[in-house]
Length: 197
Image (cartoon, rainbow, N blue to C red; front, side, top):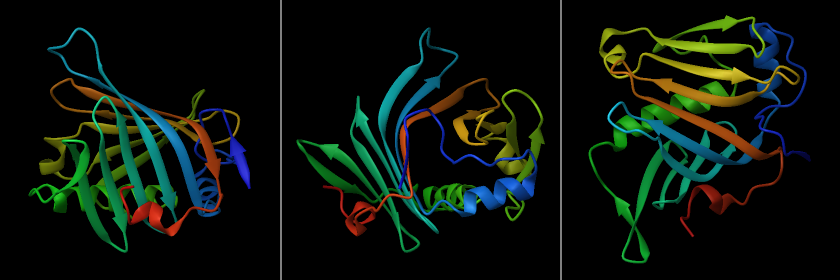
């Protein structure tokens, strides 16, 4: 069991090249973390801030749970996606049309968590050698570029880990997600990805 309280998603061993990143990430079988998400909109003076919990189990089970200010849960298990929203003191399943788009996005995230940046034809990856180093994902198709300008994964300069995710939109809006209280390769209950609780 590896527990990290600094804001990193992956263990030490990153050597600054794609193969090292893939090998390091492929050794991670589970992740649990707390996240803070800041949504910056041009029409707002201050960002919209949300907090929650994130869970991952290889190869592609995910739980993305917002706990404040609004509760909702996204579960990905066995290739199926379920979304739940908090209504009148209980979670209600959301059957909206965005489910299929959400499933595709979650597949992309699971692929990145395995270190598979070049297997994805939707984004073109590039690696910057800065302090801290970053992986920049640029949409490969015109349709996607209308929604996303770029996704930047910031790596920890000491451990080769991902500390933040920044999603930039063409209109100038952006979303920044910062992770903390990370536990790597710890046992997770099978119901984590199946039940809202």
